[in-house]
Image 1: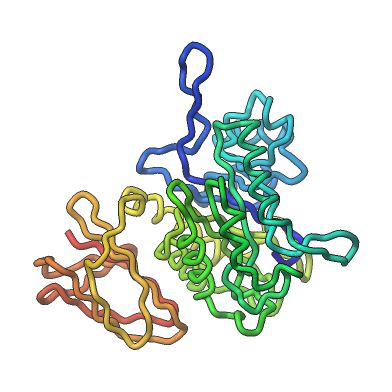
Image 2: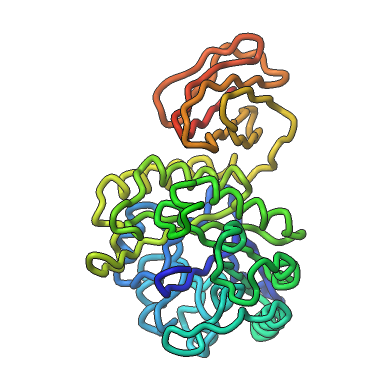
Length: 377
């Protein structure tokens, strides 16, 4: 990713291995329906309480760690960690907070070989070998790989000689448990991508198509002014989150650093509107976790709109949930028809309103990149 930082992600898996006496050692994430992994990238564990207050449950990456002090700080706050596989992590008395191991970040990008000098990407076969090696050291935790923006951005030239090699990913993902990538459209330096939030969904879709059984997809999301002249709005952050989830992401985490005009590690707290939106959306995701983690239902609805509306349909405890997000920055009126539904209204979750249904159909207004979540009993 830009700015010299590396993004890694966690995986939502239950992983167990037998230990002495026949006891099952569990090192993966909680599997109950009410848990949904929501992370933050490369923050000091001394800030764990602040992030816990806005709905974060996982620290993704520990700078120059993990150290014993970092793991102990997270354990005190009952936070989870996604960490590099060093000797401290493998032996720590607080290693229970580590729920997954992470590979080197963005192996598909050109790798630094000197100050300002970049070589080729890490060969895909080498990435797969590293996964096997990490699993041999500890088979009880999942392995994750985060790829660069080349997964979605066809104009990105940061892969060096690997530019255009889409077959790379089919090999590199072998053996991994979680596939992720990062792209920040508002902060992008690529003119064709700049401000086009739909690139978030494009990469999630590309990875989901490649994923095999047991592999999940996560997404990294922008929250701060990576472009000093233009930071994302709260509505744009909300749109990126739901684009990722609607297109198949099973977890999210936030990139919260900022570099200009001054560096700040936890720069999200510079922006009360973003903190408010992230807090609200995190709580909403957790409240909807049982529905989000239930199987998607295909062919249950049809949508007519002036702009594309991406949808995901879930049925949980006799409720139909429709998660919908506009995929272009243009307002539209959408007509959504739900098969085999005879109710006369649908609740619009989180908006304090309802829409009327007639013969299973309703209309609603979408702003550019607008998001609406519906519940029909």
